[in-house]
Amino acid sequence: MNALLFDRTKKASLKLSSLSDQARNDVLFRLADAIVAEADTLMAANAEDLLNREPPDPLYDRLQLTKERLAGIAADMRKVATLPDPLGRVLTDRVLPNGLQLKKISVPFGVIGVIYESRPNVTFDVFSLCFKSGNACLLKGGRDAQQSNLAAVALIKRVLESMEVDTDVVNLLPATHEAAQELLSAVGFVDLVIPRGGKQLISFVRDNARIPCIETGAGVVNTYFDAAGDLAKGIRIVTNAKTRRVSVCNALDCLIVHASRLADLPALVGEMAEKVTLYADPRAYNALLGHYPAARLFPAGPDSFGTEYMDYKLAVKTVDSLQEALDHIRTYGSGHSEAIVTEDPAAATAFQQAVDAACVYVNAPTSFTDGAQFGLGAEIGISTQKLGARGPMGLEEITTTKWLITGSGQVRA
Image (cartoon, rainbow, N blue to C red; front, side, top):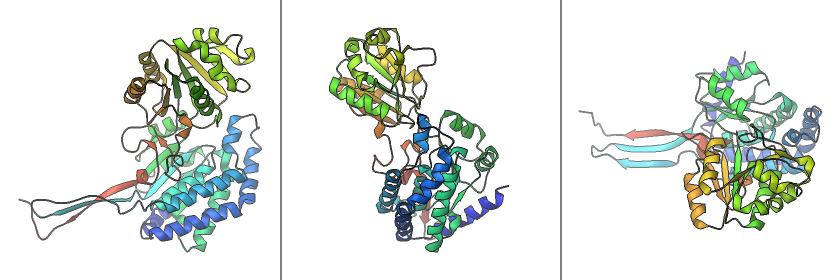
């Protein structure tokens, strides 16, 4: 059904590789201005999607576009445009004993497919990063954000047309399961596919893709409050990690507390008492009983740990040692982001060395796991795999390499 669209996108990607970095930057600056100028139009489309959600639902926040958020999207796009050109970087340059000159340079993948859920900002983020890095993109968003995505891609195409750039460097697929299956089977048209969403989406893409895939998104995030943790720091870090935006993948899901600090647990979670429901193990539950709203305090169950809540919910686990905290993270974490709060340098070093995750924090909240926060301008996703890109994926992570070999008539013996 979408074979013609795939073919047009592939052909457009070949033209895109010939655009100069300045030409690509000019498009992104023009588009950033257009996002701000057309904010009302984009928000009107977004309002249609929001009709299917209620504000108390955390996913409403994930879906919503506001003038402030659109201004932030535009600012991130301008940041991407100011970053160094990721293409043509010389990564290796040497001459072999036989006189052959070897040079390895960075080049685009070609066409990148992205399957994502109810976050319309991803449409602009993915386009800006793909365009800057010389890649065309095929976007497959979720039904919940379909009107928002249609409006965003229409705006992108208007700007591309005004700048005389082939508008097929970006295309939006229907928000259907069948379109996702076609994208995952687009051998010869799509060079890389990236899922950006929850565990179910990522598993579906990994299990069905016939083209290379990078896993991103699913985040079961833990923070360990150590025996040597500073309480004031801990309160700020835990509260920010949990409540800043509960529907994003870097939000805190489990607070791990050293048993010697249980007396501080009510203060550690106190600022969240009006919003967050806790699922605490027996020792933590007893420490909180009478110090936390009864309506929001429950004993932890079999599924409390290892759950990505994406809601105002938090598991609490008590441990007797740093090693036990590490074992808990190894068992229940997803390799996304983990943090320790401690004033013990040895504990901090041991934690960062032992935790197997893309991002490992000491005395800072996991809410910083974000491409823009890392200075990447934006992100195409947070990779949780080990082969290839890992962590926030910016421009460098969506380029590949090519060897250039120059000789003077040498032949191989």
